Image (cartoon, rainbow, N blue to C red; front, side, top):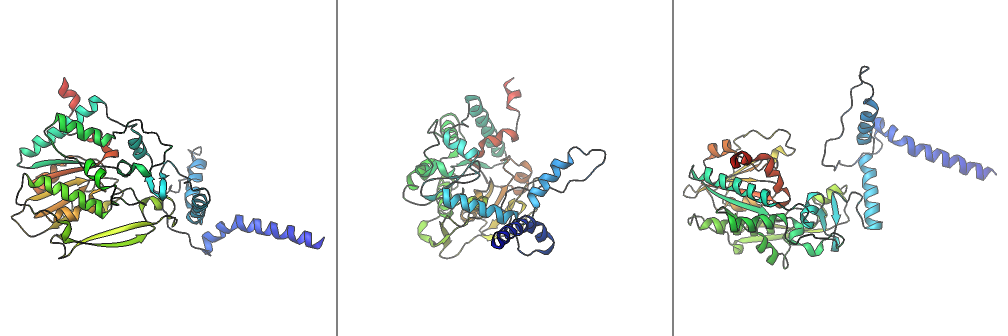
Length: 386
């Protein structure tokens, strides 16, 4: 009987300890929490107003849900449990687990893979007119314009995407636009889809734990871009594969594993490409162009590199995060290269063009973000119809 009572008492104490430990840990920090891996700002502490009490309970609940002690550690345990035992992600809208432990971004990248977000005929015409306008505007300043659509990972490695996602159309939105431009426009559109489709079968051009192309993929893209620009600017040097040294390591990191609470259950091969004689282009002081309001990565907004060879043309790149790896490689072929990550707006950025006076402007857009361009058109195409 005493043994039975002791067991009951022990379970009660254990239960209460588990419930109250997070509260005690707030003040005493017996156990530190892990890093917050969510790509959003935690809910702020609400202000209590006697004149407006109704919203306060829900606002405080959101605040407490985001800030209670050991939240990230408990979430990581929950994620690892589901991944290890059931091999599924608790947030399938954000991360998709493919074959051979490949991770893919969810959301609009899934819609791009399945073909749900393809462009209508009117949308294709609007984007074509927009790009034609940019080409003409830049030409009036003596600047050449090139347009690049970066394929999403599943467009290149569809063989590793889960079979339960049905493709409504094999031609993704990016390839759809590239093909339409080649047939209906004079815009210099550089097609990376065929290049990556051929080489992606033999080589790893994207991270397995991240949705971006790796340094091998970025280098291959930069080679093709420089090759296309070389037709208009024959003085720019090409980038030779033989001049690069490749260092290989393994890691469990990536923006997709971070979204899974920094799980270490998925491994990846990382490549670092370094010129054998070192990079000719060197980082330069930033101009300090105003960062887009609310841009979550202000340190990535502006990057500048120069080779010191004034006989080479000047380059301005407007891109998203896919421009990060490609930037150092492209910089090798130009006198000055400036990269602007304008918070996924992909605008013409006339003020920066006027300041930099580039000989070449390259617009690089991830194909799943192409629809963002409709919110930042340079001209009102509907009024032009009238």
